[in-house]
Length: 278
Image 1 (tube, rainbow, N blue to C red):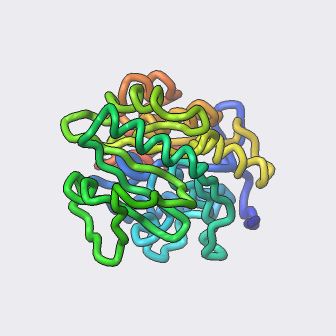
Image 2: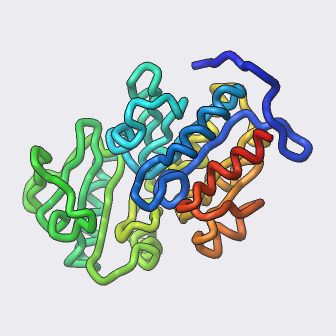
């Protein structure tokens, strides 16, 4: 997808930037999980200036679309921590990386052996699946109507984009290391600050997905500004030419960033974009 440029690309010191990539939860979204009107205006101004806007999130595309709400504020969605690329212009997933079936089985049995109370959910090509333990664990208290339950004694899901794993009483940042050691090397383990971890196929993370997208658009890393706040944003912030962290981010994210944005509750991403646009 290409867009006509209405003016020269905005400048950072020593470089013209052509793409903005922003995380959603804790970054672009307000505490009420909405895109504020100020953010809508800033993103719209960036796009009018010919800048490509990308949302890069751990959410699935079918979780992001209701937040976007039909507004033309984004050009591409990098979803599921980089496992899925969605093109809003054609309303379609254009790229999706799946976890091998044998890895799904290995993760399930190995994690349960060490963490018997672990709760599981699976994002697949056809929707969201969960087990009974996950429904009791789910911190969002989500609506499970019409979402099939997976029985632990039955067959596990196939065509899996992402596995979600939570253990009651164990923080997600404390779970990443142990599950990484238990899981096969063909997967990537991360967390987004939620009380569960997220497993994708190896190579499916935000930095790699953004790199693939930019390559297809003829954009190089030095022309990218990225915003993030958590562990699953590290690869994206590391790859981008200019990285911006939120003030509540952890030490690793803050150390990675070139600058700090104001809080998301104060439209921090919008404030930085407004400044960059001049």
